[in-house]
Image 1 (cartoon, helix red, strand yellow):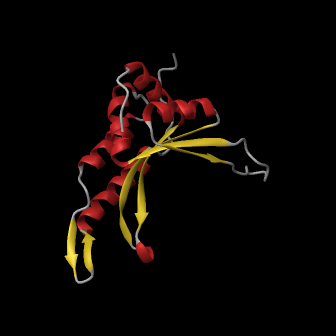
Image 2: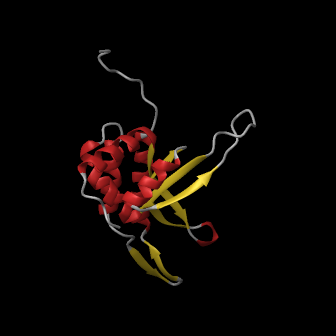
Image 3: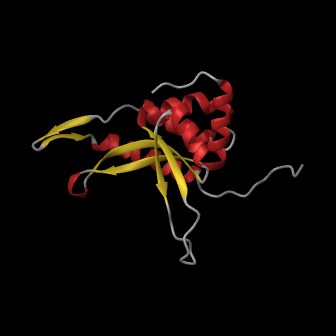
Length: 159
């Protein structure tokens, strides 16, 4: 993944992430419903195709089209979802971090999550498995990320 060097692009993407983005630590299930790990993901949902093309051209990643029904059963306006995950999400978060205002704590936690290291394996009679202590630490980070996303009451000065 090649990250552009333009600080204008970094700042612009930070604004989009603050307003439309989602930073997630996602649980990944293994075979037969057993947990095999967690992954960092950064995604942006928007209805503007031109924005998605800019994201793909500038930062890489993947994009998909989604159509959902609203609460009334009527189709909502179609939207696009762009995302990067793992090390690529970390690379993007690293360059936009100085410009984030709303989701800075989530980005910090996502970067800490990545620096926590790859899954530590233990050998069992059935092959290598992730160390349960390591998985528990990752589960705690996922819970912390969810708490950072919890709605809060604004307490600004009102100016």
